[in-house]
Every structure is written in structure tokens, then in C-alpha cells.
Amino acid sequence: MAVGFASLTTPKALWSANPVTITFSGSAGIGSSGSVGEVVKCAPKVDNVVFHTTVSNPTKVSLSTSPGGETTCGPAPDAVTVTATCLVAAPICKGTYTGTVSILQGYDTIPPSLAVTIVVT
Image 1 (cartoon, one colour):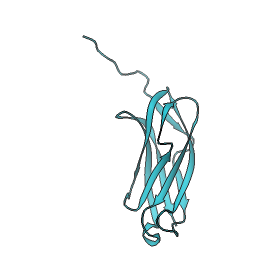
Image 2: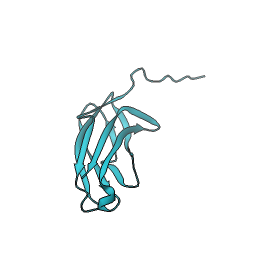
Image 3: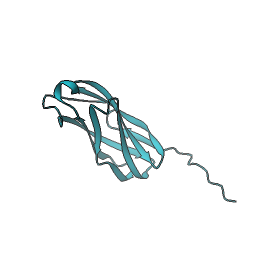
Image 4: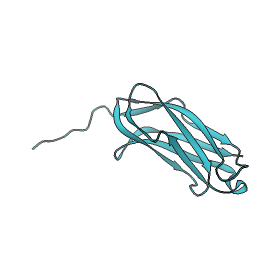
């Protein structure tokens, strides 16, 4: 009977800045957005990862990444753009929200997640 063992070296993510803040004007209402550029590395290298975003009030603001994932996350730095977008009219969108960007490989999360503060003025 074969027995598999978990890797002794758990993958870790290294973000260029963590936490980050995205500040933008929501005066245009729906579709107003702001972005921040990030660089991420993983050690040791992991394959086929996706970026999963969450936000404190998903009815008002969305959080997305570009790209949405990577074939390989390794020691070479990879650029990721994190974008927050208003989903409601200007006066309702204004406020401060929190979000996270997690790196997932299958059902496993590669820590740490990126903490994002979103400030809509």
C-alpha cells in the first residue's frame, strides 16, 4: 500500500507590499475603479495557481486581479494588478472596505494572503 507524504517545505508567497491600499474617487459611480500593481513570488515553486479575491461588501465593491492566475508561481517575480471597482451609484459606493487576494493551488491556500484596504472618496 502506497502512502503519500505532504511536502516538508510548505510553499509561501512573498508580495512586494503587504498590506496595500487602493484609493480612488467614486464620483463616476458604477464602474469607477482604482488599481495597484503588485509583484508576487512563491517559494518553493508551485504550478497552476489562481488568485482568489474577497471583499468586505461585495454588493458595493468588487475586487479582481489581472492575471487571474499563473501556470507557475516561483522565485521569479510576477506582476499582478489588483483592481477595485464600484458596483453601485456614487453616493452609495463611498467608504472604506477591506479585501484579500489569496493564492490557491487546488484547495490549498499559499500563505500569506494579500491584505487590501479600499478607500472610495
